Image (cartoon, one colour):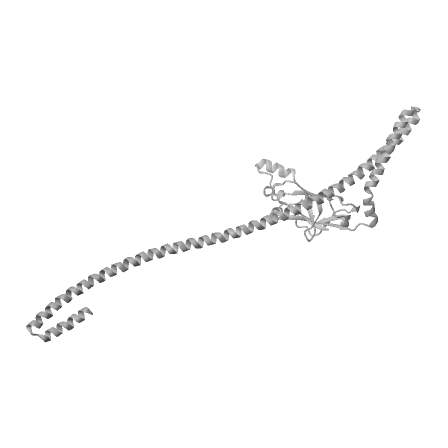
Length: 331
């Protein structure tokens, strides 16, 4: 039919666990709920030790001492009708090797009563059990079979039978009123009243049982409605989560683009600094070049003056040598 999990973390603080845990099929479909209780109980010796040493009642503080754990599986609610016959459970706790099987709920009902109770002694408490309580869960497998055709028909006739029983109670009330009004003799009246009261009580008990079964069916309908609403909420939650993830991804992309743009701005600032530095170096080089040009023009004027003097003195050879010297200096 399905399985359910009961997480054991409250046992770390020696707290009892009382849950209606959902029964899920292997496909994750809901198959009702199971009432499970797990109750830890420490010995009087441990209680005295904890009180004497001033420790809190926690699992690590009773290491090496025994611990009793009671597991109770009382009933299930909202079992599908196609698996509602002979419902039972099985489970293993902590390091047990074999499965523990509960009693079978006879007949077909969507709200089977199991009344399973079992005490387990953990002696002593070890780090292995502490790890189980901290990280583990009790896995319970739930089984059921298909009801017969007659059982299904009886289930459909339930409301009609309840109405017939209520009508019978009305008839018994009328009979009681009639007996009281006739003022019969004491003994016959008392005997008849006792008989009618017995019938009234028996019918009332039967009606209470039938009304209880009807109430269970109404609870099943409410449970199915709640499950459907939960599915719708889960769907909306998934859609909202998906939209949130998309927004996060878009925000991350925008952040990456902003980081890249900031890097480009920093690179542009550095290029502007380098350009200004290169411009200053180029300006300095032009200044030095102009100074060299002035020096060359000055030397040129001096050599031209010397050459003119040599020509006037008639020394052409020295003039030619001076011309070559000027050309070399210009180069």
